[in-house]
Amino acid sequence: MDVVDHCKVYFTDDVLGDAVTAPSAPTKIIEGRVALHQVLSCGYGRDVGPAAGRLVGEENNRAYYLCGSASTADVLLKFVTVPPAWGGQSRTFTFPCGGNGILFEDGVYLGKDQYAPVGGTTAAFDGTMTLSLFYTGGPTA
Image (cartoon, helix red, strand yellow):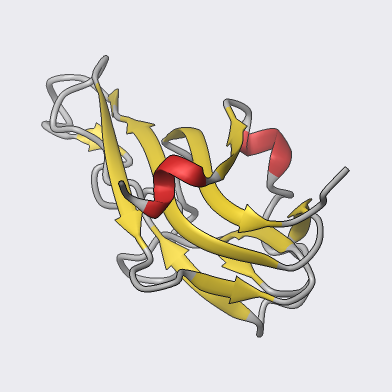
């Protein structure tokens, strides 16, 4: 059996609402001392029409990060859900943390980048639909 079989799960289908608008401080989403074992993220693309020849978010999907505090200097894991090649589809990505996971001493904080990874000055597209975090520890009550 894998450790993920014994994990608690944080799930949201409102990633835009749970992560404050960038570049604000990250928001606490899980309380307590936590070992994060896996991140599962689902994203989508949005067709901008045949003239554009590509999807919004194809290269500019917003990166999300998990921090050990409300500081953007305390990033422990950063990830981008790459959208599919066609609009109206979704794609799921798994980010396994390996070993015993990543230790978050005082809870898990969720933040997001203001700019797209490509170029660094273009506003990013939010193509992430769902986010699941598999963890052990946290609140016992």
